[in-house]
Image 1 (tube, rainbow, N blue to C red):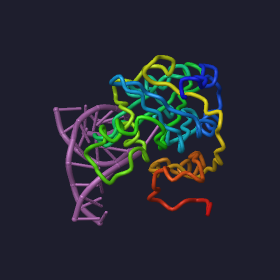
Image 2: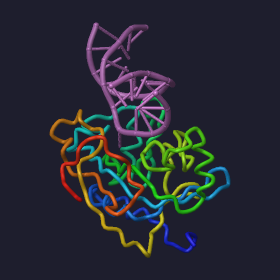
Image 3: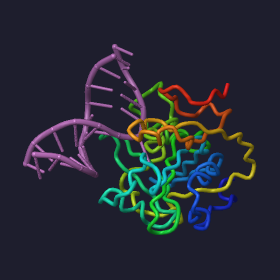
Image 4: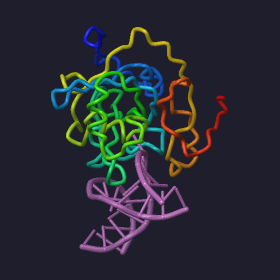
Length: 208
DNA sequence: TCTAAGATGGGT
DNA sequence: CCCATCTTAGAA
């Protein structure tokens, strides 16, 4: 079924409003084909990072070896190792030279669940893909995808035609170092999804 | 060279 | 609450 859905084109990611793009990505499907196995997850949680006005962004006011791919054009993949353990998957947006990105934080497994569980075999009770580190592991994404694009066969995004997601926003997770920018409501998630990550912090907004 | 800290997650 | 684990950025 997924094969008939429209793959997102470069224009989607070249747009300049990373916050809007992060919101629109909720409900779409992330597809990978590593190890000759199709795995599909519905995106249920994202965060926006703006390289020019956002202290939480790795590329805020500086270019380093790590953040170099964030300066590529929209549609490139930015993966980095967090806490020495987790590979966090980001999508670069905006035109070349403007280092914006969307962090994918949680997926609802749609296809290839057995493969996802196999990749996450270390933990038995844990959720398969509800968190930025776990979803990368489930989908087979690691540092070797850093700098690739979403327009090849191994990793891409497709539209979800039957997408009835109710998306709401709140503060981002784990960015306290960003001072006042830590309060920006740039985290987006599907209100009804059971697959969003569990926030350790208290939410800004009461969304009962 | 040296070192503190990190866009986390799982276990106690 | 605790800590695994290692790259990176910035300081010395």
